[in-house]
Image (tube, rainbow, N blue to C red):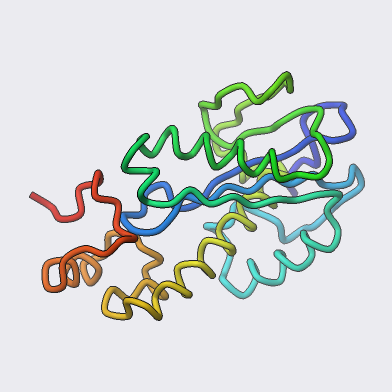
Length: 193
């Protein structure tokens, strides 16, 4: 069972991202504020959940959270400011999109740029320790997956509905054959040396 929250603040936002290691598509962040009595025995790091379970949890999180928001940073921005800065930009964007101003931010990972005057704590593998980070990880992943499935229809030869833009053998073979698209991150190593 994951811990409900880290701080004593009523509005603690958990935050996480999806798509950092992808070579196509956006990096997506989500911020979630859960009620203090929220409890889900299924909630976990989104990578450990089946797609079906993630989609079930997405509905629960959207219905039961106090507030949630998602923010996308596209490949052109990633190429301009790099993936780390783009991740922070996505996280800050998600926080800006919350209707409720968080009093504390719990961040998955080991780095974060201060957001306004709100205190924060970075938790390595936080999506497997705290429910609000796990909830953010589920939303970031499900929203990003849906986006990749949508742009798959534009460029089906890369099979993004399956690989979600990650560097699979098949994805790289398609880049060799068809070249790159406007969704590819040109600052990344798209093909092995």
